[in-house]
Image (cartoon, rainbow, N blue to C red; front, top):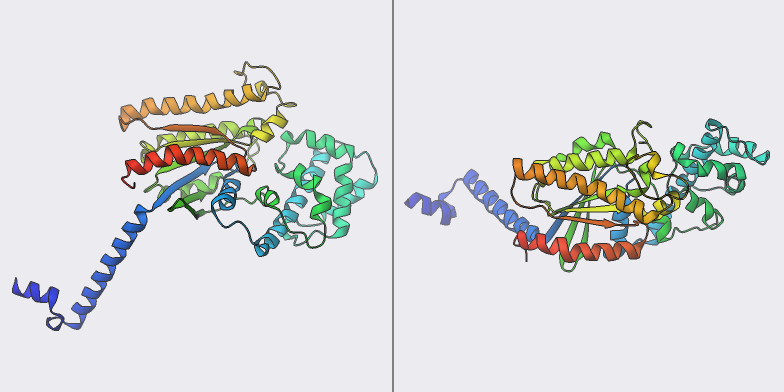
Length: 373
């Protein structure tokens, strides 16, 4: 006992190795105390969903709303991605013109199409004047507009029409992307990315993972200490196929992934926030693409956005209710909370309003449950 007291209080009784060990032990203890304090001030949310559901756009909105926004230097870096998205969009339509056998109305656009296709979209740094002129001519062609109307038959970026309709502004010298330009950039998430924001004296840590199937095996170690899970699903993908295999219906794949996630033991008591995203694109698409063609059980009227939204919402609710029955049998008798919302991730006011609702309900309840308030 005497030696023990000497070891703890009297440095002269220790060997050099023991002194090093004691110093290291104290440093580790201090780090653990600091980490525990940080954990009590931090909210960790896991952001999941299939590819192109809008996760990256949601993260960019959070930075605009709760972060520092974007500097001019960052906007200049984003300009390159905007230019690449423009080339990717117009090249996709040029390719579809041939596949779908849609002719150009104006003969000169055949040559413009070949000229534009010579560029590697991923290597584009700046939108040159001659390319902008050729792309504008192609976009104005009635044939390409007809091809655009058939976009569900091939893969096309959601932002294609937005960027091409703003081509004159984007092609100007010294172009600096606006917030909306940045929000509409398509940039696939790879790996696991964490983002921190300050929200009312708390640190909000959002963990975003890749949406493609090949990325999902990396999710597992993100599950610890998650206060809530946000699942993003696109309302507008009911008539589209996965980019990875071009066969599986995107919405059915998203529904299947949602069901799988709800089965995981890590989430049996975790509040689930569902964002049914891209309400704006659904409203546009439902006018020309009938939901019943892809979901025969749909019995609502054609061209009715609200009925279509409710039908898709019910699909997710049914999966959640089924998962709750299985959960109470196999895992926990505690009821898991479910908070569904309709969102338009490119609309800052919409995301601000929805996230305020989430903050006031889900996060406060979760913090109380974790004794963080």
